Picture 1: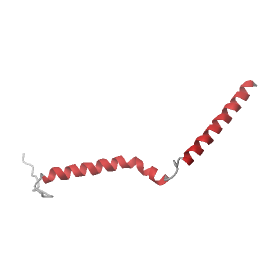
Picture 2 (picture 1 turned 90 degrees about the vertical axis):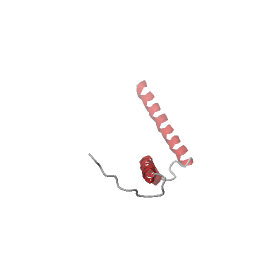
Picture 3 (picture 1 turned 90 degrees about the horizontal axis):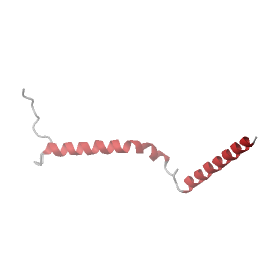
Picture 4 (picture 1 turned 45 degrees about the horizontal axis):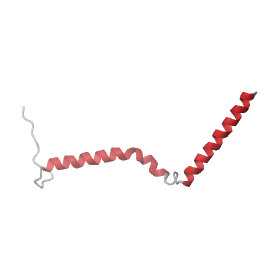
Length: 76
């Protein structure tokens, strides 16, 4: 019987703790912009894509001011 009371008290303390954490999160504006959160996963991928495209454009120009140099042909 004593284990039942320990389990009830523990579950009540965990519930109160969860409610307090939720209230703290609301007061600290963690739920301010929920739409932005779902895009944060893709930001690093977009940055890598932009950085790689910028690097390839710089290497293609060879400093001569040309955007598209002569196409390279493969000789075997």
